[in-house]
Length: 317
Image (cartoon, rainbow, N blue to C red):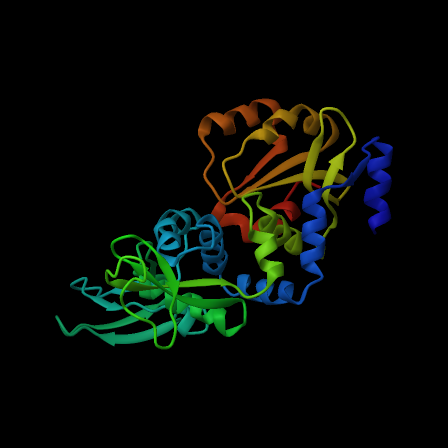
């Protein structure tokens, strides 16, 4: 199977070598942590969004990740907190954290409203995702990841006055060692393994390349992290070959638009460009891509990431 895609690349005179991202992704995929992270991300779309928020916050503090979540959840049209209201008076009746109920929204639930006494029968369609969350919501959700050994909690004390941070010890002093002011407790959840830390330690989006590759590699012929041997250098995150179509897949976890410079090469050598993004690109940039590639350009928006393989399957034969 791999010979087919390599033969096509040779025929098109596309010669490549493995890039740095390819080496990092391959190294991580061989680790035990790969299976743990994959299992967590596959539980629910919101798991991928939360992991992404932690990376974007530098894996430092949950509060910073929580601040990034509303926008990321809204872009992905999901949440891990869902809300349903009385169909008569709009009183809030249920607010489940899906991490506590098997990552599934209740399919059928009967609740009597304490305000107007209406008997409500709710289905999964009645539950709306909640984008603005409380800190305890996020902690409860991530704690489920902690149970799988994906995250390790770290409890810290920060001084109200000078900001000095210390690890919370069993008999830790509530006053700062430096200025003697009171301290407050905050919680961090860091990846349990060095492999996950390395995959997510920078803003290059290696984790997204790995995640998308995992979804595509078992269904199509794929090569990833291909550094094309031309000048100026062109790097393609994932190359897919299916139904005699050669597809370039760009995975973006930032608003970096450097890939736009290689559009002419992609138009010449590939049948399609799939842009898989966790962010919202500006219309000006998207219009520039469409101007060059036309129908060869397929945008995979944040809420569609888990459907990328279906979108490739749906291409004209």
